[in-house]
Length: 425
Image (cartoon, rainbow, N blue to C red):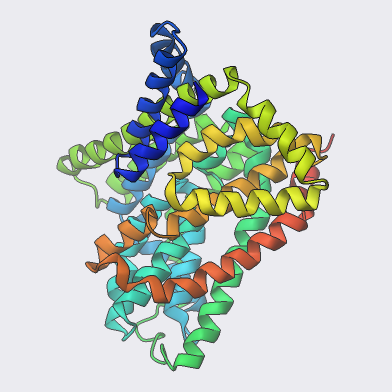
């Protein structure tokens, strides 16, 4: 059964069949090969999405789309620009900082790419930055959308590996801030080397004025994250609060969302949510079948024999996930691999929360690596250029994040320090 499933999935990938359909077909053929009842597919697909924490996914996607249309994104850009926009390379730094703030609400890197990229990519081009550089920067910065909590991939890992989502969220701040500040330092030095961005401060608002204008927007992550860690509501309930807050601010306070806009916003959110849920359903069936076939145990025993220490195990996992992330969508990869790898990590004495951050950061790299990086396609759509044009500008950003990944992997306190402080045993 396992051989049939793997070969079917690989063949579908080679024929450029979508990830969700490839996994689903592989599962169906696996059931047929084992002469099992086909009703298993319906039951397991439903069970995969019939989990309360997954309700947060459509709500966070909807919140991100409401923020984009309601003027919240634009005000966050002006606020970030008032902080870092006055130095050479300040506009690329503004892109990174805005994505860090936006990530504290949206939970989705693709939503961050469209919401912030629609504003900053044209601004970067207007200030003389190459179009390909602007698209590569935006795609990379938006990766922070799944690392800084709340994060949809963290929710998926928590459900798949049975790990506290609240602990994953609080552990994500350290890695997210590390990557964000590393990217800002890199783009500042890179722009000084290239001679770009000497006029980035033109038209910049004062910090006080920008803060006043963005006050309601800045209050949003405070309410969401404060509510989660203050014990007022769960991460899933926080997603509904985010939608309500974005709706009220966009319609009543900023008055940039009209009733006619709601249909477009809801339609876009439903389509995005349906795509993710379809992937989760198919990946859940696939994970059930390979678990039933004993694949996770076999892989676990093999890894324990080949990789004798936690350091080697983490290095091997990072190398494998980096390659897997290039070809398989992040959500599907987490749902399939987390139940397999997390128990092995625990056997090696690695905290499952720390391992979750390693998985999420590593697979988030897949969003900006060809050939199937979703952030790249989104950024190229906004910038109206082909994917091949941005690869050269993308490589330095990938190198920076890989360096940060090594720190995150081998300095667990970066992830666990705040977690241990908040969730003191």
